[in-house]
Length: 108
Image (cartoon, rainbow, N blue to C red):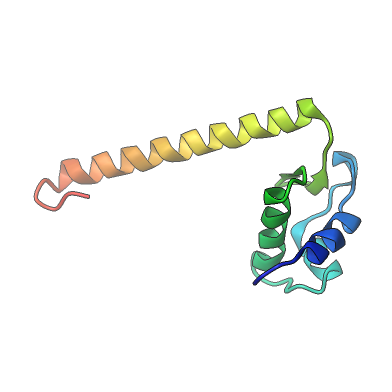
């Protein structure tokens, strides 16, 4: 789906400005009349688009999404994302190495 700046404005209008009032993706999708089933792909895509356009939208699996203007909170979130990315990369490397060890004639 191609989103516009107007879609971002609608998103920002419904997102809380504090972690204490965060809202989950299904609620965001419902309030924006986007599909609410599955993983709310369209709502999450809009959130990423808004971030790419300079909005500080953070999330937590348990509590949902919110807007932050706290340098410390944003830095902690970035650190968490980086740690998860590093862990994912390590698991990927380990899985590849295990496959290649057991399949020397059919390497990945």
